[in-house]
Structures are given as structure tokens and as C-alpha cells.
Length: 99
Image 1 (cartoon, rainbow, N blue to C red):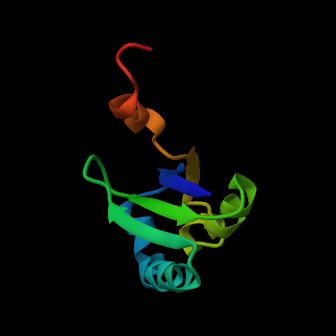
Image 2 (image 1 turned 60 degrees about the horizontal axis):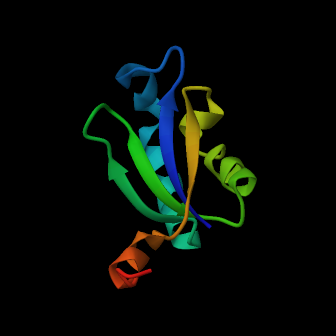
């Protein structure tokens, strides 16, 4: 299952409170990338934060993996997890106009 995972800053989150955890956060992201959980990761352009494309068996399994990020463990971020599926709209390109 492919998932879009967006970080959610929690109360008390700021660049200053993130700073002591950032190297561990990056190292942990690298481990999750090598494990196949993180497929892509991007910096958000609308605000500070990240968007992760993840691969997991379920939303709950993904939630457990995301909770292991250091910023999540110290209560500075949570995650919005959006399950994604194939875009089947392409089928309209091949549908008969007479149907």
C-alpha cells in the first residue's frame, strides 16, 4: 500500500526545539529508506516540514513506523497518513464514446 505521509507540528514545535534532534531524524529517515518503507521524501514548499511517500501493509503499520522518528518520539510532530491507490481515470481515454 502506498501512502502520503505529512508531518504535523505539535505544540512547542519550532526550529529551535527541532535542532537537537535533526541529525538523528535524518539518520532514522535513511534507515527507513533503506528498509523500503520510505520510497520518496520531500521538503514541503508551503511550510517547514516533510512529505513522505511510504510503502506499508496498512495505515496502522505505517503509523507505528512513523512514530519511531525522533521528533515524533519527543512529541514535536505527529503524522497525517493518506492511503493512495491507482489512478483509474486513464480508462476514460480508452472508453467507447458510443457507450
